[in-house]
Image (cartoon, rainbow, N blue to C red; front, side, top):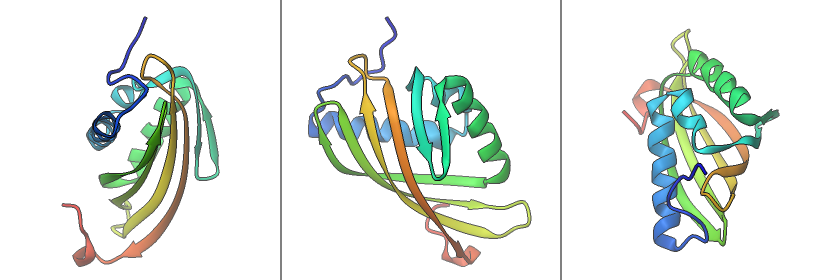
Length: 137
């Protein structure tokens, strides 16, 4: 059976560990690596896009990082209970045209007993920024 430690139920320490692992994986910009943290039938809502399963996750992330260049993400613990974790995040990216953006959002995560994420619901807003306003380099 595939497992991704730490396993639920989460403590404050293991919730923060899970968040850091997710941040590191997303900052790798490796869609295959990121997808391994999710169940094979994981359900996502990302902005207005609904994604189901690892194959769709990989495809979505490949397209995302083709458009969002110089991507850098920071996740922050918000709350946890049992097999759920809530985070807030910010990330910055540059378009192919050279414009910079910072995205702000919240995610709600639900994990199975093996520590794989079954559900990910993300609400995200983008704000145009100047290059000298970047926080993450």
